[in-house]
Amino acid sequence: MKYKQYSSAAALLALLAFSRPALSAQGAYSLSSGLDYSSGKYGGPTATEVTYIPVTGKYETESWILKLTVPYISITGPGNVIPNIGQVVNTSNAVRTDAGLGDILASTSYSLVNSKRSGVVIDVTGKVKFGTADKFRGLGSGANDYAGETSVYKIMDSLSVFGTLGYKVFGQSAGYTLNDVLYGSLGVSKKVGAQTSTGLIYDYREATTTWGDPQQIWTVFLNRKIDSKWKVQTYIFTGSGKSSPDYGAGAMLTDKF
Image (tube, rainbow, N blue to C red):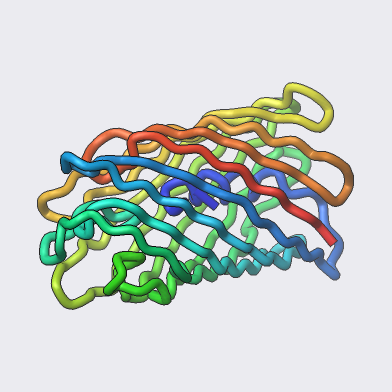
């Protein structure tokens, strides 16, 4: 999402966090971009298709990660579906196509534990989603959201396991009310070569509305390091329930400088 379209941003964030290399005190910069596509009916008769194109800048030291994502989003589907939330009640369900600036995302992470001897990494992260996507065009909720989470990673030679637990506070917007939610993820990654790893991530989020249900998404990913600067990630995912996309796929290219 992790960098998980919204649904897959958590998976990608988790993946990038535990795979980060050793850094100097001066830190390093990186720039990432890619494309995420998802399709889901979200409890209705008509599918909603979302294309999400983020541009993410990151500054990283041994202890800190600062990140800012500015996305472009395109959506085709019923007007009562908002990306990463599902159906909201007091909007039109007529099918529409619209596109524009998505919600800008900012996060700060601090590494409480980063032990090379034990292979254990523990991070705490604060996130803000700014409501920059146009609510009246169905591109977002129009409100700011806030989240805090803790992530734990265990690196064991060619195998890594990781998990995240967080809490999200949704900003309220006229026309509907969203519930604050607990969310989390569990995953495993396996090196299949000197520069390649693959794995599986399960994401869960409580229901954001009284008529919805929890979001559940399973993501399979492949991570390939091209050279000392470039890395590419590809993934496919599927979800279950009215708050999850039925299926999707994406890719992201990262340049470290």
